[in-house]
Amino acid sequence: DTAVSQTPKYLVTQMGNDKSIKCEQNLGHDTMYWYKQDSKKFLKIMFSYNNKELIINETVPNRFSPKSPDKAHLNLHINSLELGDSAVYFCASSQDILAQETQYFGPGTRLLVL
Amino acid sequence: TQLLEQSPQFLSIQEGENLTVYCNSSSVFSSLQWYRQEPGEGPVLLVTVVTGGEVKKLKRLTFQFGDARKDSSLHITAAQPGDTGLYLCASQNAGGTSYGKLTFGQGTILTVHP
Image (cartoon, rainbow over all chains, first blue to last red; front, side):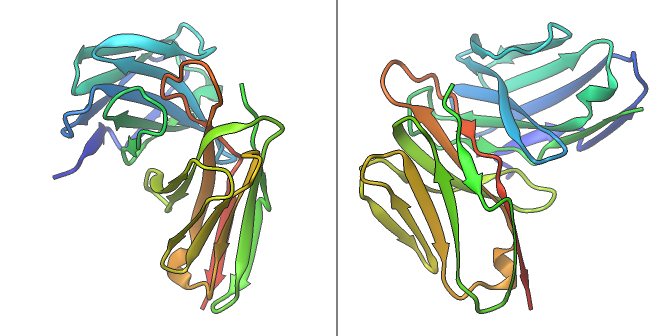
């Protein structure tokens, strides 16, 4: 069984569209994250949720809206997509929000905005 | 936000060679993690170092944490093509409450040629 899964794996869309990426973890973890990896492979945190509560909200445009319907799911909705949103988006989870916890990453969603 | 400088950015070597990747910061790390990311996959945790001067070994990989906890290195002995990938260091700031926020270095893309 896949520990952290994301759908879709690939997403190609036009500028201005709205899209969602879904993430599910079956590890029983309390904390989930969204990261963005740019074309230079730089990985940066966007959001984290602990027990469905937003904990970290980095300086991300408000076109990005995460939603956690339950502890096992963290979805990312993006409005009015822009060219600069093209990147690989990774979901991750950890047992809790404490330091040094191992974060388990999903396989990524490759978003290309045309 | 703690900034991590990782070097080198690219490394292309022949099978059997040794290599070292460095991760430095002007701030003290509370802990330091090393991840490996293979093409098309998410990062996978290799090791967490916590104590200054700590050395951990994982088969042919040796991880060191600087005495002052401001730097770390990853040394691979007798590299193999299967070691090819993106190596990332990541940290959480010392002191205060950490919310599981990982700050990543820029990454080192390692290619090991047969």
